[in-house]
Amino acid sequence: MTTTEGLPPAPSPIDPPRRLRYNAIVELFILGALCLILMIALSMIRSLVSERAERAKSVRAEIASSWGQNQTIAGPMLIVPYRIHYSDAQGKALVRVGRARFLPERLDINGTLLPELRHRGIYETVLYGANVRVAGAFAKPDFSGWGIAPEDILWESAVVTVGIPDLRGLRGNPGLQWGGTAVKFSGGSADTKLWASGLTATIPLSSSAADGTRYPFAIDLRLNGSESIAFLPLGGETVVSLTSPWPAPSFGGAFLPESREVTASGFKARWSVSSLARSYPQRWPDAGDNNEAIVASLSPSAFRVELYAPVGGYQKTDRSLKYGALFIVLTFVTFFLYELLSPVLLHPMQYLLVGGALCLFYLLLLSISEQAPFWIAYASASVATIALITAYSAALLRSALRVAGLATVLSFLYGYLFVLLQLEDWALLMGSIGLFLILALVMYATRRVDWGAAHTGNVRRA
Image (cartoon, rainbow, N blue to C red; front, side, top):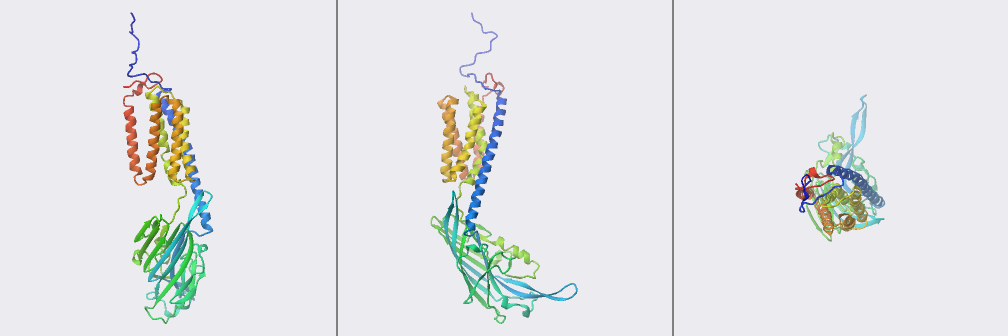
């Protein structure tokens, strides 16, 4: 008669024995170390993404340097010099020349932007030709309240200046129509404190003109530029109207358009800015204590439209890399659960190879996105990665059902990541919900595992 006294109980056929290569805690530490190693690889790929993005930026700058940089139309501004009398330390009377600056009562700008894409190698940038008409009117300069004697005002030296940051983009020889008189521009800014480069014209002003006299003006500019064009609202009322066949503009700066219409065939936009919405006045002299503060406040008041062209999926690739550690951890957890809950025995080297495939996904994504739209690059890289890991796992998991489960997990992860990359505003919420559900699923799958028995012997369910 056979007795079983003193022998361990036979495992239940419902609860077959499981085996791990190492103690469960030791194996988790090993997997954690592998994750840290793979983090180094991900950081190297992220550095490569930054390097390629900087390279694309420098190529765009090189193309723009021979065509025209970002342009800003500032002005026109009327500058009238005047004499300032003062005494030195010894009481000697001296004279220096100051400048009084006057802004137009009204400024109307109408322009058309004609964009085109230029390529250099795999990189591209958007350039444009702008046809802009600047019109408006100045009032006769008013020096009242400044304590300047009429005989000290140098009317004959009055100039009109327009700020243009990159004169290499200027096409033709623009002229100024001043009160019905044609006046020629010369290159250079009349006041480098205002803007470093621009156009200047000496205009006919007379001290004998009656108060309330208006000086209408008009300037026709043809400019080459790249990526964006901006305007300073220097008028008592500034109205800017722009049209362009570019279908994807981005509006920014201190003021947004009052109205805009964006379609697949282009855009129309109109800005209307009052001088009351700015932080600087319509006139100020050099002698003012706040002169430097006024000049410094001009540039921040600019508003612009940007015509950026897509230059690869660098930003989205960089964003996807932020989820790289999560992908590695979740894939490792999937393999670990197979090892824990089924008769599958895996080596750390096999985990490392799978992790290497996960890292190469981002390298594929970067390289393909430089040649094709991002969604094609993402689909190609994810399909290749899932196919590689699934084919490799077929020899490790030894079960079509387990392999199908792994492929489903990977497909879900890459599909979910693609959705997160599209939902920028909702990415945090969707990511948090996804992580919560994944954690709940892992907790459910391991709810009956007796972790105290998870060693190289039997792993029993509690």
